[in-house]
Amino acid sequence: MTDRRLWSYKEIAAHIQVQPDTVRSYRKHGLLPEPDLVESGKPYWFADTVRAWVARRPGQRGRR
Image (cartoon, rainbow, N blue to C red; front, top):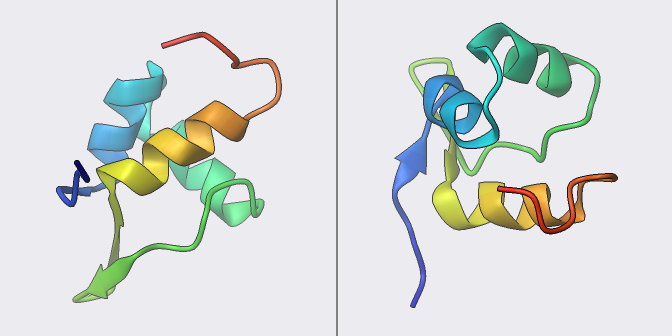
């Protein structure tokens, strides 16, 4: 089953337990995957994209 809900910086931040500005910084520094959708200049990622990225992040294995 795939999760195609779109997440903004706010939802990603809540998922990884950081502030939204931290997620913005990750994107600025190329640490976040490219957005799945950009609407009105705002980036969005599918929940599955974010979960896959979290699983690949160094030091984050097994952490939720």
